[in-house]
Every structure is written in structure tokens, then in C-alpha cells.
Image (cartoon, rainbow, N blue to C red; front, side):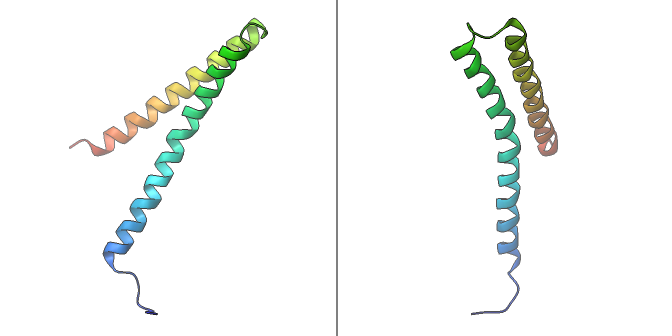
Length: 80
């Protein structure tokens, strides 16, 4: 077993994996919230109060704006 430090390629690969994992988590979280709110509205919309329905719509909108912000920030980073 070698005790040498990982070479630059291994370090780059590890960093890419960590960045990808972080970005995937950051994108998945708002998407999960949006899906949950919309699923609840679809399945329970008729028994929820108007206030509860409104709260779910607001949650979905806030998370959609968050997702849009994250995508915009990522695209700004890769623009030439």
C-alpha cells in the first residue's frame, strides 16, 4: 500500500465528485419541496382549507424561484 499523496488527477476527480454531489443536493431539495406541495394539492386539495391550499402554492412558488436562482447562478459561472 502506497503512502504517497494522491496525484493531481485523483484530487481533481474527488473534487468533481464532491461538487457534483453538492450541486445535486442543492437542486434536488427545492424540487422535492415543489413536488411534495403539488402532490399534496392534487391528492388532498378538496379537503384542504383555502389557506392551506394557498400556503402550498406559495411554498411551491418560493422553491421554484429558488431553483431558478440556483440554475441562473450556475449558468453565470460557466458563461465565457
